[in-house]
Length: 427
Image (cartoon, rainbow, N blue to C red; front, side, top):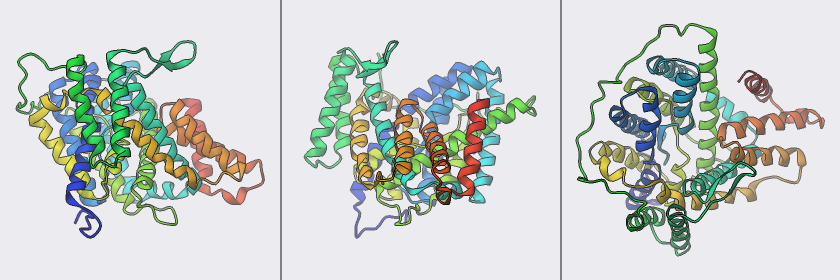
């Protein structure tokens, strides 16, 4: 059950891994309602929708795919929902939820016919390995950014940040995570998150509100539940929005699943991933349920790698995450105390651990090494897993065409390249 094998796995390790993943990604419970509330949606109701949607999708993944991954509203697509669809394009949040529902239904259909799995299997194995490394670098970059160790700079784009309480706490968390991992302490990443959170209290980074109590009843979903508005959606502009959401989500999910599968050691010798279609179906159903609850598109979280690094290998890990999301409905004051910087150490260590796929890369042939490099570096510099994959596949197809290696291409890669080019041209 849940892919748990008592001969090679320990229930305690799986549960600790699930807790590690949850505490690394539970920032979404605070951030998602904050972002989506900019559209006029009720923030308290959004907290409930975020927790419930994440729990449903992750528990489905545990039962269907039996993999140690977790799902929640996408951090990129919630911003797209709030600031592009509702902000720049002028849709109401009710119309944006209707768009998310349509996207979710289409996701279910293309997953059932295994189109998403077909696309995944069409990606060359060297690029898949590069995706894994790129995601590791991307996760580490997120950790450094959350700690204000790396900050924006108008002259150099990014630079080393100033020493503040936040950055110092981030450095402490990163070093603590590294020391605990190096000493093979069980649950090292989870422990580092808790200790860093506690250290943050006297530093003023972990803020305990006045009259704080650890337990509260879940907020009502009524203000946003099933609030769809389909009027005015049958036009070219809406079709472009839905296609953009589909493309970004397909390749964001594919990239994350590939990277996590390599980290979990479940990838088969031919590069395929067991039960990957079930994993994709769970996020498609989760997106549809999320739209009904009142939140934006759900996806598999790269932070799942923290639980994998802590020893999670089965659906018991993801089931633990799902249960903790349900508990968070009643314990939200506790979970919201954890500052984003407290997870930085775990994220940076995951980046270190995911570098092990580098040794599997074929770099002897420049026509294979170049696209792999483009995939890894643009994933970080574009701050997007999907864009890294887009540019990696595009560069692979182009360099193979101009070096007379057409036999290495397949029809799917060529079609995808055309779609990517059109997307970049028309936005």
